[in-house]
Image 1 (tube, rainbow, N blue to C red):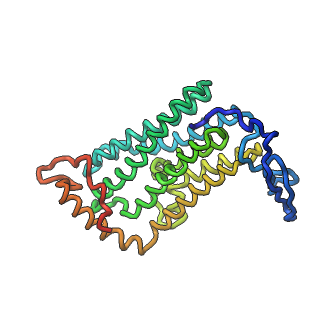
Image 2: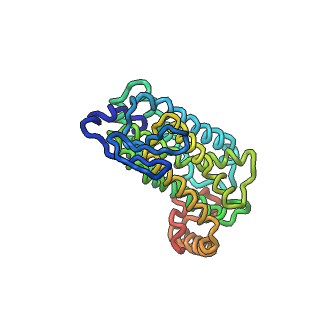
Image 3: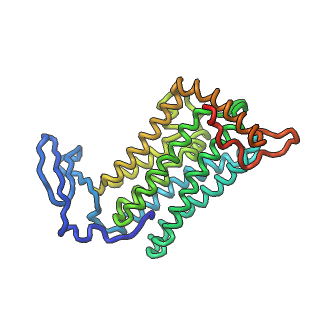
Length: 322
């Protein structure tokens, strides 16, 4: 799991990795260690690795730094928004509270996994990591469920986000669902394993980061502004991770692919948010699906006639009529 300790590149001299050297003059040749890119660092070469050629412990503190920055986004963003969250009108569905608690436990679990490696409890880290991976699958289900429920509840509430915000809300969950199993499969390659799972964890930072930014700036209306408003935390952390590895010649191919997925998913989600065809078709379908599900389940997304609080299953299939 996160920060897994392995003896990297064990036997690398016996099984060298044939790669290509790419230089400014377009010349190339084969090397038996790693890929060299002669980019913008003068005459020095930048190594792009698939496995690490450095001690695993040298990456541990960096993982703590990335998670600490992530916790600042989440803690400050949701901390200052807690009063609004607890006093929303109408009150949020119960599934949203479940989501908040479950996600907090997941983030604490991910942090604990990193701390286990940092303190030398690698064996327990490996055992507990399987529980964390299974628990993360629950987050992948609860997160979109709560988003759909909240959106159905506030479809006609003045001043709330439009239904197309779901494209941005789902992008982080999709990235987590893809990167988490990939990172687990690479657990014997601890350097790649660590980087990919860090990205899987921070990919859901959009909600906390946007709340943090909203303390200082209103929500923008341009494509780039909206992308950075929600996905800027991911971009910042990816940039810091890249620069950290760049300076130490530790850039890994798996990290670049994972970072590309997170950035591309955010850009695609923002594009859907501004897509007029998507927007025009989504709202009518959402209303139709909401009405159908509410009637069938006898659960209104708002208050019932008796004034009861919304239940746990507030229209999780709100897009059924789309």
